[in-house]
Image 1 (cartoon, rainbow, N blue to C red):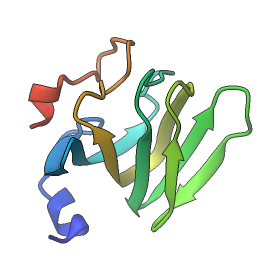
Image 2: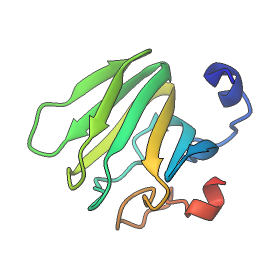
Image 3: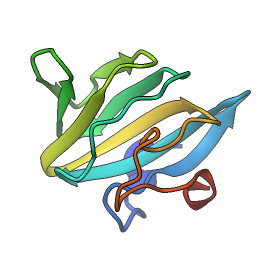
Image 4: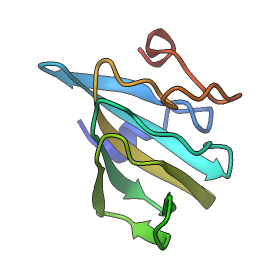
Length: 118
């Protein structure tokens, strides 16, 4: 599987799609563009971000924001308030437990259920 090829079929921004699974973990891809992801956290799960293509602005509450570029990986530990945005389309891969809610306990216009991501 080629991540850049897989993301060519994604039509909607902020809409993760499951592309595989390993044990109790989903492998997802998404395209981020703009600033619609709300501040949120995942109380019981860590979350891995991998930048396939583009640049992602990563914000963690109480810390300096930073840019992630193609090939970068960052792991958000459980309970950490965070949000992401991108001026231009940024293709990402996420690795999350199967129980991880897309935007934590926060319900926003971009929130997708696990079923919507399958």
